[in-house]
Length: 505
Image 1 (tube, helix red, strand yellow):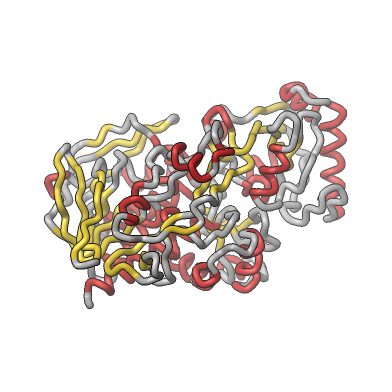
Image 2 (cartoon, helix red, strand yellow):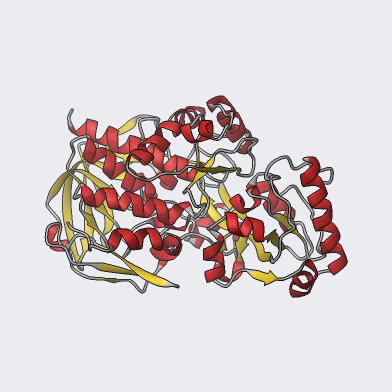
């Protein structure tokens, strides 16, 4: 499959645009072939880029490995399986690739990385493990967590070897060290990662079929043996020696969300519309066990009108949260569950993320927020207060007190210790109105460190693998920002390698 000549340049230019690409229904998928390819367009709010997908007529009767879903985990699995010598196909039910990965605006957590060392950041795998376990309230599967942590630096190197370089390192809520890795310019990791993985798949000529809905995982003699897929309005059975489920969570399926957590009825969701949990259901029909299904994370800073997440990396760079009176009310760098509870505990149940031009220049991901009309801008603190309809006196005193805390590196008000490298003093000033929204489903298929899907007796189902948000157990009762990308890359890669090894048995 060959790309348009100008594709590479556009992919970099429009990386931020792809934050919303996977949820778009306006995409017009044209026919393409794995050899003489034409194109399939992805429309976005501020422009368009172009990706090439495989024509349905190219779908073969069988592959060594079939991958269900094309988010970060699925693409990482496809690359790893291909590089291990397996024939691979990706089947994506949506008209575009990317899944929730496309919407990720934070970064990827990793410890003991070369980029941390270059920047003098003294981190350790043990500390990463301990802080994630604390953030998950001790409910994380220790084996899965240990594997993710211990392979995180290697995963950063693996991405870097493919031209996907995450060398901008900052803080995420719940961590004492800077370990969330982003693109060099501080832009959103999602579009950058999807584009980079896609480019590598194209170089390897791995077929990607979109509008290809898998309806069943075929079972033979107790093992996964292929899938049934509907493509071009026709159902086809595809044989496979192993099947990798990377179809994502169920955060866009409100019936399932409220089944496990009724109190979330009425919440907006940041998930793309394809996050419906069908991969979990299909695997369960083969006897797969599930874990932590009731653990559904709400993210504290979601722009409600567009259900769009504002990354905590913004707070990690120095932004603060203020209430409707213009006052800070909590440690902004606490874990997501605690910050969400603090906002929900306010009478108004919303807050404002406040920052200045210094931060604006440092974090390119804000470009996307501005393009979506989410950002309020003012030339002075007083004018910002007026625009927010909060007390000018309170907001001015709040920012002055914060700047004093930054200078002293001591937040006497709420005990914040990270994201204090810059004050709020350079005009213009900015704010984004936020409130909690459904963000991540931490429960899913039960797997082991080989990414084998386990049945209710704890035994591996032969030939069935899973990675990413479709799985459960890794994040416990609360996921720390940046750990989802670590999860999908580390375990996606592992699923690809293990499924390819299974083929050789």
